[in-house]
Length: 127
Ligand SMILES: [Zn+2]
Image (cartoon, rainbow, N blue to C red):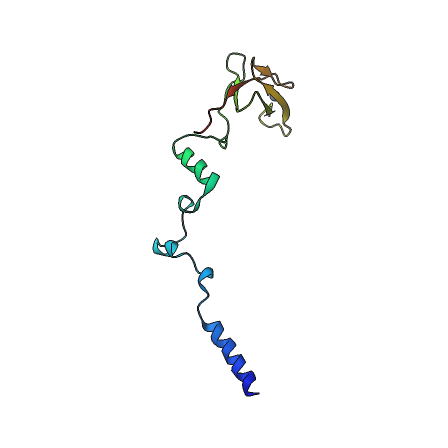
């Protein structure tokens, strides 16, 4: 009986102890007064993308494409790292379906549904 009471009181003492170190917030976050920012905790590809976007670059086409009129004189410019890229055309603003087609290097091509012009341009890679 006595040994069982000792075990229970030992368990209560363990509950009162502060959590082990890995469960606490990192010391750096506490020192700066809160949760680390995206810049502080981003690593790898995410960090490279954030650094590029700070310089005004968009190496992975994360931002929405620029708007062009889509005419023969002002085609939609689609960047690609190869000689072709698949394109989705939302022919009219409120369309719920997307027309997908392959855009190839060279002369501008037209959307098979609405006829908007698209032109493939080489993508400037991040160095
Ligand atoms: Zn279209």
